[in-house]
Length: 80
Image (cartoon, rainbow, N blue to C red; front, side, top):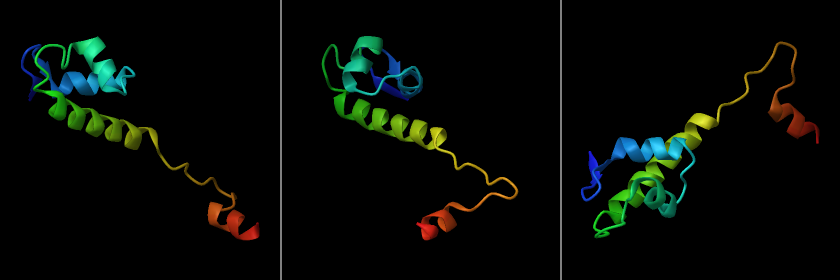
């Protein structure tokens, strides 16, 4: 879906920009031109940016699988 009509920026392009390190609206403006012209896309771009950042955070967090013979984290906390 198009987010910024003036610069033909899509939701996918914003997601890709986040994967390349964009984390602020300023980054999207510098990389893609979002809000550089009329600013009508600002709210949609903010929502899209937040969603892409959430997705990136979910992918980067993964629980460490327990190894055989290891102590469960809850048991470690109880011992403290």
